Length: 185
Length: 193
Image (spheres, rainbow over the protein chains, first blue to last red):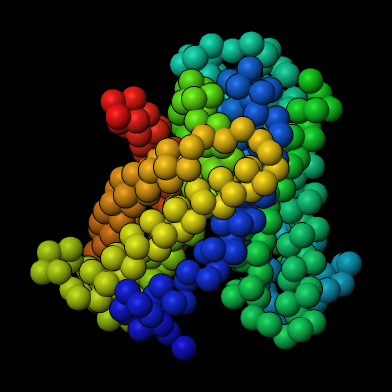
């Protein structure tokens, strides 16, 4: 049923979800706080934060939206050789491989121009690409599981899966970036 | 369709939106990396960053989706002037929710950091920063979303495909830019008081 267009009705429909999502995002903020000293020392790593979160969330929401459409059209089956499942997962991986090298070069280059860098270009690109590959795998696992759960419980994947996946992938973006920085620096 | 066809189509459809949000995210990142002095001066601000950015995306993405659905259904006219009552209610609700959630995020971050025994800036500084940045970025984003969705619709573009990339790009960018403006403003005012 569509929400009535009043401030009260819109707020009642949105606010509870927004408050829960905010708590989830504070969780990812706390992970950022854990390596704040490193981020402040290396500005190019700080520059990676919003774009890594955003790209991870977008990869998840695109995959979730596409699986949800296939699901509604009845063309999706949870089978290891289902072409929609495998094809969309492969596209997510290919997108991550195309985007994350640009993320690394862009973050390093722009930081070098604006505030100076302390890490080499290769370090920043390696951190970005390694995070991107790990994130692609996690995004695929999280999105397929969430879509499968929605399917088993006959929930509409549009309502549930997309917000859950987007915000989970936001958090995973920060966690994976943290883990990669600890492993590579 | 083979796996290869599905993958190729999915890749082509998603790439432009991802590239747009890549630009917004990179500019936001550069602003964040230029904010190191403010991040040191206001401990806890970095913890707030993901929540504030996500709130901009969630609130104004939903506003854009609502307006584009209403345009498809003929519920509203694609005109800013003349002040359609429903449009005003939707924008007011987005602003109100954005401010409420930003304040809640600041309070939650303060509470969690205090409980963990971490250093955290005074409560009024965090809340004032979240509020001022919420007002500034809210007004800017509502303006951009409404005008861009209307302009796209009048030129025969499907507003549904515009909203996602538009909000992820401008949300990060304005969210971070106005966070910088807000924290500088609040620190200046706090310095005077």
